[in-house]
Image 1 (cartoon, protein in one colour):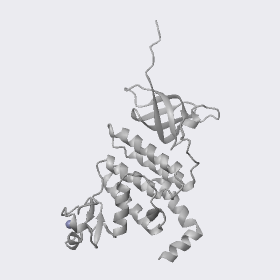
Image 2 (spheres, helix red, strand yellow):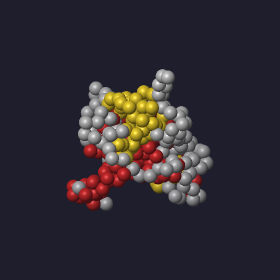
Image 3 (cartoon, helix red, strand yellow):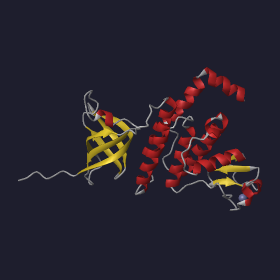
Image 4 (tube, helix red, strand yellow):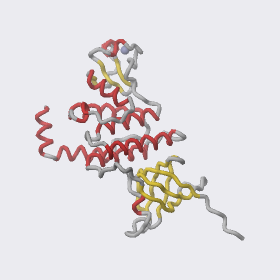
Length: 276
Ligand SMILES: [Zn+2]
């Protein structure tokens, strides 16, 4: 009587979230390149010398081997290695927060089915630009990531036409608003009739910034990263849009920490009050 081979799979993956379980083990949700979302148990991974330990850190890009039993919700993590690009630099606190925020959002807001494979690619590209580009704070790249996620959910904001009347000409005008419930831009004429009242006023520079983010280049954007008020405004607009359109979305804890830290910093607080 032979032993039946146990089905296993190997794939590149991004670690989304981890939880301790039992005495020494770790549960981890992975977004894999080949099998989409997979939840694994890493036996003994909290032990100092466990070879699985480095593989279950949120935000890491790994090449892992795991059991693949379709009838089971939980697979066994068997082994693997950390994958890093040669150009990778250690992330500073702000970029680390953006990376953790991104994997936190992805863990809760996967579009499902084969679009999860597109999501792996989006996460990998975001991770790569964060760790390889020297310029910018990472904020504009994080916003580009959010745009990419909205796109995968089929919820790209309308930025060319008025979401209410469909007029393209009315958009290059003043008096625009951006309204999540309406699906994006609202032109001045529609605003005058009360449309988009739940949204926020949108100036032309912010509109241009949103359009650049939607272009999916992941380039650091100095007009967003270098202008605190613009960065904050774009963050609010995208946050509201995600809250309205992406099921299960909420502000990631890592971003909340970043915001609190900025407020605790006396210099940041001083700049904050100067801006008022
Ligand atoms: Zn309109």
